[in-house]
Image 1 (spheres, each protein chain N blue to C red):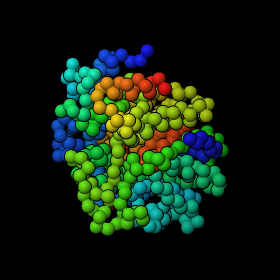
Image 2: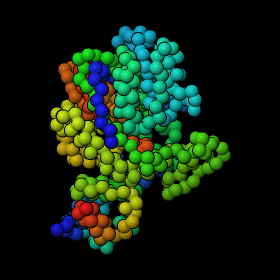
Image 3: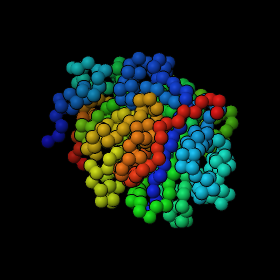
Length: 355
Length: 80
């Protein structure tokens, strides 16, 4: 596990967007009555946001970024770097960063970078952009983090359909001499690469007729190689094993007590994991807002979605410290200790089909 | 001194709310319960973390048959 801190960079704005289309987990034909009941109680997801074909992760992120640029009256030319974190880019190539550079009207001299990261992606993206800005002396950077992960799901897979949801986000970082350092602690274990993965359609198993061959792994767990496969038990195991120690190590290294941060924003994977983390770390639930119930697991975007949905009114006033923690595909995990002071943060945007 | 079997079973029953109290015994095989499904398995694995601070992998869980086996596994991990 790796701890480091970056000084003189400030979190200035966070914005997030979800598709307006909302689907319910009630009466899903792939869950029987008993499973549906247990699901609501343990995983804790009631409705999900599912992007129609016309909306991609890039569209959700661009909407969020445009909101920040408008509210801050920023000239796009003032953005010196952009990091785009997604596992559902518009195309295999080129990367989303270049596509949104054009749409946002960023300068051709801006540093554009794509990062393939899953549910730990917000923390990895924040760390990457902060490092880049610090090393290259870039004044302003945008972090776009989002997925339309529902595009990768088999409609007949009960282990993924009721869980995943779509969202995109934008975060503005700026150089500020008086900013508290951002602290990061990142880790991964490649042994867990197949715990959450899409086996088909890449260079290892190029797309072909076999990519679409549906196979029944269990009852109501039918998918093809082109679909996202997730081993829920292993995800739970990795999360329980690594996340709490990672956060403890972050705080110890940053000389911060567990009860000091005002908020703990956990990746929203499922309610059981959140509950276990609260217990392990001894954090009161009111410090760890949840958005699972109505927004599901939006992959790399759960942290900004939760910030915008639950803390939009809080982060503009006074100084707040937040621990941000994500874990997922890789298997990877990471946490950040970030100070929020006068952060521009508005409530969630909704994107309609006609966009 | 490890975890008492009765305590272990009582804790499991507390988490497995779909299973009527008194139905679980040391020789019960969780996978054979009509109420059993993959979500119950997640609940059980999380409950070990919650109750004993012990994390087990999917393979370790799959390697057990009865509650007795699970109890032995948790007990052993607790004393590692």
